[in-house]
Structures are given as C-alpha cells and as structure tokens.
Length: 132
Image 1 (tube, rainbow, N blue to C red):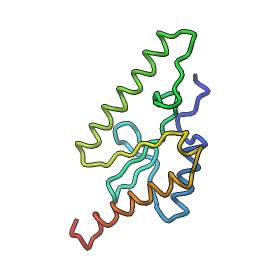
Image 2: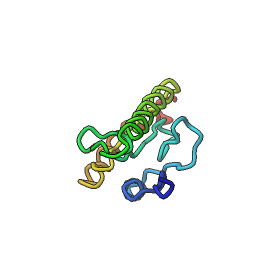
Image 3: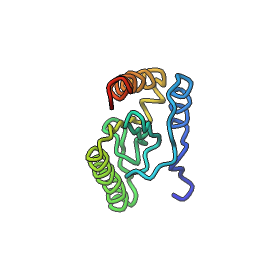
Image 4: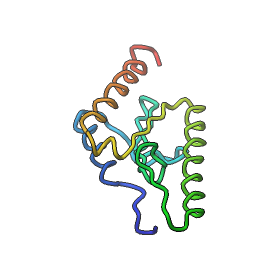
C-alpha cells in the first residue's frame, strides 16, 4: 500500500490541468479538513477526486476476496472520514465537490464543464460587486 499515490494521481492531474487551462486558478497545498485535492479560496470551494476502490464508488466498487474484514474496515474508515470532513468543511462555509475517478476517465470534458459551471456560479456569488 505504500506504493499507492494519495496525491497527483492521473485523473486528478488531468482535471486540474483542464480547469487551469480554462482560467480557474486553484491552490493545492492547504490545511483544511481532509486535505482537498484542490481549493478555490476566493469561491469558498474545495474539490476532492475520489478513487473508486478507496472511497467505495457505488458503480465500480468490488470488495476484495482476500482479507475481506481488513479491507471492509479500511474502506469503511475512508468513507466515514470523508463524511466527517465534508461536514466540517460545510460548517466552515465551504462548498464540497466530490468527483469520482471513473467520471474523469469517461469524460474529462464533461467533468470540467460541470465544475466550471459550479465555479462560475460561485464566482458570481463571491464577486466584489456583491459586497462579499
């Protein structure tokens, strides 16, 4: 498991580069709960790119056949921690967006468009013209 990357995975980097190319500047390093994959501080928005196995994707998760109890505890812990971090971030006023890795692999353009629509809406809400 030490070989498994927790940061800068291929789907995460692809989505980040796509959004950056569209003009949405983000932060990667942060001390927020759950360490979001990228943060848009001016829009109070965080994005997590979740792996289908590690976060129990409802469409693609297949429980391992070996060491089933260990993996069930591990994956359940991840999912519970995700919920807790989402709650903490929302209490602090952040919008939490979670994207599954398979969504990015299936259509990077669709994921990017969905995020751009959300970020554009947040940009309008948090623009200086609104006094926020």
